[in-house]
Amino acid sequence: MSIDMFLFLMLAVSILTGLFTEAIKKVLDSLGMKCNANLMSGAVATVLAVCVDAGYIIMTGAALNSKMAVMLIALVLLSWLCAMVGYDKVMQAVTQMKLNKSK
Image 1 (tube, helix red, strand yellow):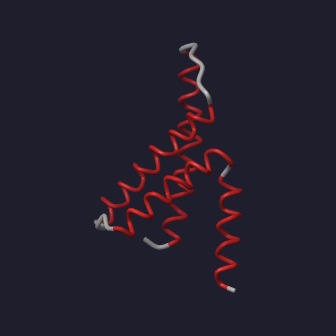
Image 2 (cartoon, rainbow, N blue to C red):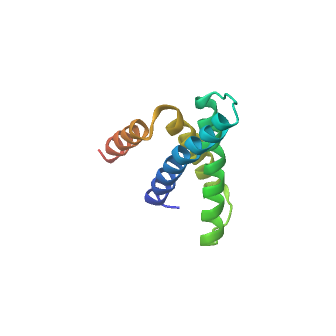
């Protein structure tokens, strides 16, 4: 998996997390239930990251090797981080790391 594909998957998880979290909050509100929005968005991001990565592996026929396992763990952690602090802040940090690496 290339870094560009990884970042695309992270963007997809970030967008889907926002949509799913809002949908879940609306359902819970209609049922009169309360939930911690941060914990819920973190859990949603984690589940979606695993599902998106599984979909990528199935669609591309990639083997689940140690490199893919590291990418899955990174996708889960960074997706959770995006859900907690925002996609823009995480992308800014990733861009800064890429620029420092190329120097």
